[in-house]
Length: 202
DNA sequence: AGCGGGATAGTCT
DNA sequence: GACTATCCCGCTG
Image 1 (cartoon, rainbow, N blue to C red):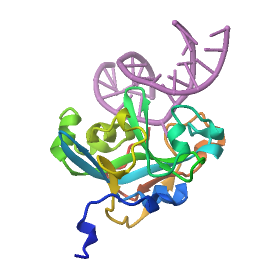
Image 2: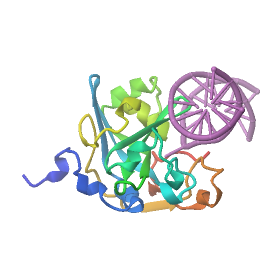
Image 3: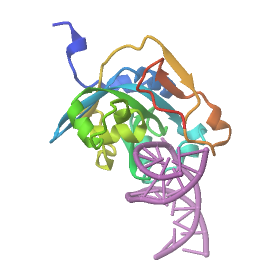
Image 4: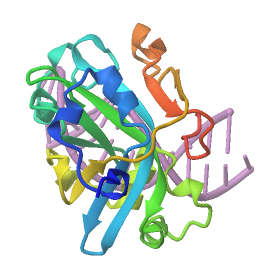
């Protein structure tokens, strides 16, 4: 059985042990899976943003600011950094080494399995692209919340598996970080070129 | 295009 | 304990 593409299983720690900007691109096309009592829902990652804490004014961990919230980013890579933004929960993947607080924000996914569940969680919204084309939307659709803070992404119930290989990757400035000095112009947002589920510019 | 929701963490006094 | 900023969304006009 060599058709590993068909096996949905967590990527190993090794996958997360690459520089943050490379990981942000490697994550594109991967399958994000969340298993809950209600059922399993998953989707392909199509948009990410890199946050390089020590040098990145836009990051919560800028200048190595270490608090209860940012603590998980100082640990090993491959863990979930969840935080709340107004009414929404946002999901980041911790990257880089221990004591190097960097991460990748998952900004959009393309629904793959458990679509009925996602639709219900999104209040029955009809337009499928509106279920997951934004960082706060996809966490709602997958049922991801703050209780997954610090979860190890190489194991259920929340994990990332191999998906498809994007034919082309686009890069550009990040979203929603206007007050971040020169950091707002860094092209650290990555997405699958011409993909309909990429989030909208605001 | 604007604005208000309603949740948390961080920073003050 | 209060005030304020935040890696946002959906509704109104």
